[in-house]
View (cartoon, rainbow, N blue to C red):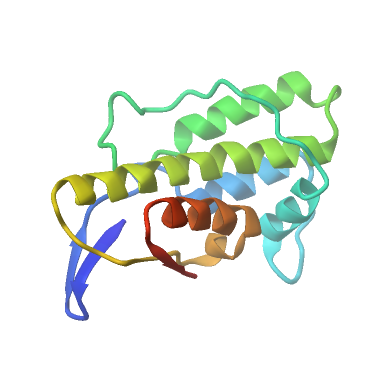
Length: 159
């Protein structure tokens, strides 16, 4: 996460401390045998499947209590999802697994963004907008989650 106070002034607030979200999406999508979509790779195919599914509740191993509340960590989430997928592969539809993967990974992003918004707000740092960028930012579920979070905190989202 980066806070930009002007066109030339940027402050890094949080980083990915291990794996990138795109890598986590690709790896978990492969676990449920998603195929590569020419128009958007594994993430696009995962999103198409997830639209037809229902997310299950998953106990995930995350660093919430131990890491910087603004940093992202997808390694533990990938491991938790792998365990979940292996355990439920034959009892859940591929669409439900895809929806669960998205829910876990994007839930982590939304939680960290919420922490960021609240910390900046508590520090009396005013800002009006949030930008969501990168390949994963094209995912409708992620956009919807971040849009709601921004709306709840009086911020405008740019994708």
